[in-house]
Every structure is written in structure tokens, then in C-alpha cells.
Amino acid sequence: MKIELLKLAHARSGDKGDTANVGVIALKDEFYPLLVREVTAEKVKEHFGAIVKGKVERFELPNLGALNFLLHESLGGGGTLSLMTDAQGKTFSTALLRMKIEIPETEASELGL
Image (tube, rainbow, N blue to C red):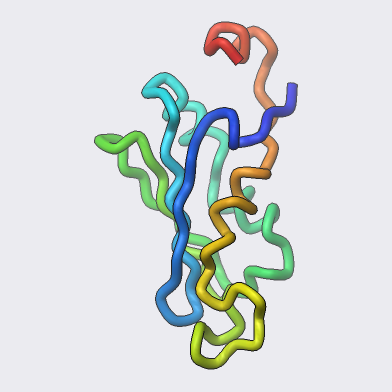
């Protein structure tokens, strides 16, 4: 079954120059391993498509139940250079929470989804 990350996590985002920074935090401890397994740098880059021109890096923060992503070359040069509506990456967290992942129905049921 497909499920939006919104049901598994909350997120925050911001920027540093031309790089968007998105933190994804599991709503429950038992959701974290699923996030680690399914929310890869490759899938995040695919989700954002042409918006992210550079690489996507992922950092795991198991003590916080979180993943942090750096989306390089995604802000049109950054807040002072870009003509983008969101040149500081504030809405990237909401956009990432709309990403859908595929999980087996049995696992979804075990997690109460």
C-alpha cells in the first residue's frame, strides 16, 4: 500500500545559500526504521524532480528518530539571489511530507496505519 510521509513524520526545513535543509522526524519511535528504509536520498531527489539540480545527501539521527536531507542546488542561488517564490526553502518540508512510500499491508497494520 502507498502512504504519505505525513502519516509517519513531521518535518522542518530551511536553507543555507543554495542548499535546502529538510529534517524529517518520526511521529513514533517504531516509525523510524521504516523511514530509514524507505526515505532514501535517491527517492527524495526523485520526488523533488527538476527542483533539485545537485545531489541529495541524507544523514541519520537515530537518537532523535530523524533523518536530515541536504538538497544541493535547489534554491536558485539562495535567498539573496533567487527569484523563486520560496528561495529560503521553508516549504520544502511540506512538499517532502507529500511523498508517498510503498509498504506491505501487513507492516502497515502492525504499525497501526
